[in-house]
Length: 153
Picture 1 (cartoon, rainbow, N blue to C red):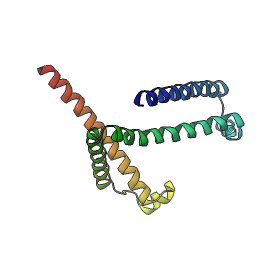
Picture 2: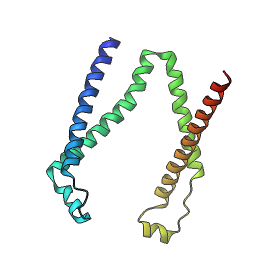
Picture 3: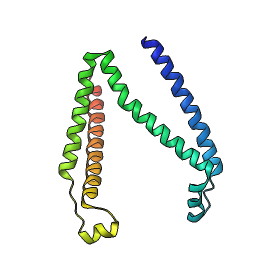
Picture 4: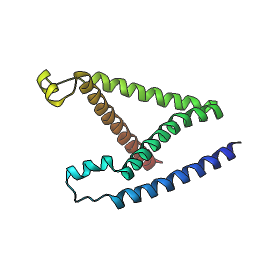
C-alpha cells in the first residue's frame, strides 16, 4: 500500500514538473524583457500569458494541498512520529505569536493613507518580517550548533 502510493505520487510529481518546465519555457520564450511597462501590462490580456498565470495558481494550490495533507498522512501511518510533527507546528505557532507580539504599527494615519494601507495590515507585515527574522536566526544557530557538535565528535 505504502509503495503504491509512493510510486503514484512520484509519477504525478514528475508529470507536474514536466508541465511546469514546458510552461516556463513558453513563458520565457514569449516574454520580452526589453519592453516598457505599458507593453507588459498588455500581457494581462494575452491569452497565452493568462494560461501560464492560471497554471501557476493551480500549482500553488497543489503545493498547498500537498503541504497540508502530507503531514496528516504521515501522522496516520506513523502515530509515534506524529508527536514530532505536532511539536514542530506548535513551535512555529509560538514563533508566529512572538512575531505578532513584537510587531506594531509605526506609521501615522497620514502615512497609512499615503501607502494605501491600514494599521492592521502594517502590523501583519511586521509580524511576517519578525517571524522571518526569528526563523532565519534559529536556522543559522542550528547550523552553527550542528557544526560545533560535529567538530567535537
